[in-house]
Length: 177
Image 1 (cartoon, rainbow, N blue to C red):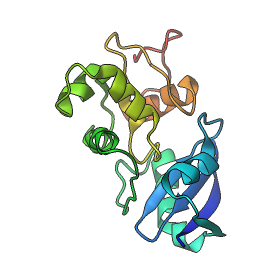
Image 2: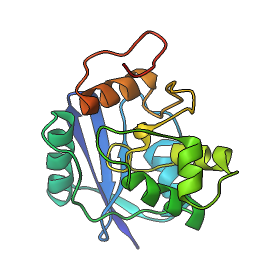
Image 3: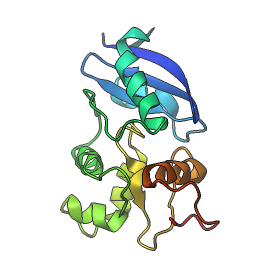
Image 4: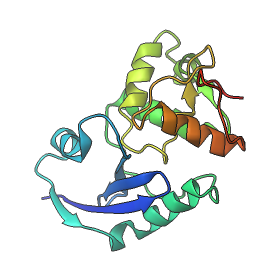
């Protein structure tokens, strides 16, 4: 039976919940995050897994998440246990290639994974990302430049993009300054 190490972190954006397997960081839950939560992720990707408290097992991930949220880290250096379809994993790998402080559109991401007409599917894969922050799905915006949905809410997305770009504010429409 698989064991998932689960812990929580009080961060500058609120409580984060993280889970890792023996292969690496597998899931990050944002404050006010939508979706099915850890229980839904486990039912879909790790059925039968047992949860155990896991602060020590997640120490490095927690440290790097805090460093990122405090503006002291630009990329993550962690083993990842990404579980999803082949298409989802391709989208998530493409997300990892978006540099800190930069954004791309869903159409750009669709082209990057070799499926230029699959913008909606790319959006769905982006929304199913189990490792927000670490796999930077917040760096994907609409072709118009507007902020599209984000599992942690548009306000958090705007805040993360502002932090990465060095700006402190976004316009009321959610466009980058």
